[in-house]
Each structure stands twice: as structure tokens, then as C-alpha cells.
Picture (tube, rainbow, N blue to C red):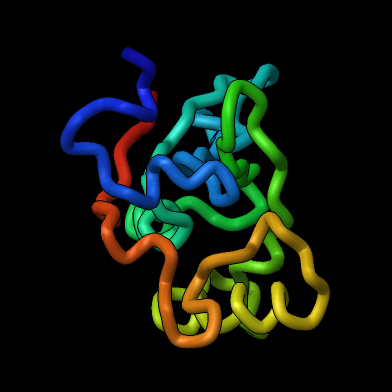
Length: 132
């Protein structure tokens, strides 16, 4: 049985046009070491991942965000998740910013976030996890 056909999986996890999950790669030493020690944070939604990073005190400059569709993660633009003050946006402002960017550019990496009033991720848990 493939992972996408597992019973109990939210319907949106079967939709291959949106990410299966989101990952943030963060230097766990926060620049204090001579080498980086990368840790990963995960969430089923981008808003859940960004909320976790904000709660952990991780600055946007310390994180690289990825959308995971299949085997290869797709790099996201961190600035799409930031307010004018350079800090992480929180829902619903984050969701609206992603929707506006998608509608203006057609950039598929940001599709489904409150697109035309309906969030493609509403059946998912927004809890983030990490670092791993």
C-alpha cells in the first residue's frame, strides 16, 4: 500500500498539486559555530511551519523553507512569509499574502492558501514539529 493510499490520511494529502508537507532547514547553532548544524522542522501546512519558527524564535534569515511534493523538496521564497517589518506573518495575514502572490504571479508553489476563500489545507493539522 502506498503512502498516499493510507486510511485516515486527510484528503488534501492525496492532492499531488499541493505539497504533501513543508520543511524548514535551520542552522541549529544559529551561526555560533564555524560549521552549520542543520536541523529540520516540519508541518503539514506552511502557516503551521511559520508559526512554529516564530514560536521558537528563529529569525527568517536563519531558515530555508521548502515545499515537499514528492522526493525532492522545492525551495520557497522566505520573503513571501514576511511582513513589511521583516518578521514572520501569522494567519490569516500569511494566508492572504500567499494567496495574493499566487493570484498576481501564478506561482504554483503558493497555490491553495485561502485561494478564493477556500483553503486547500483546512483538513490538515497545523501543528509543527522539530527540530530533527
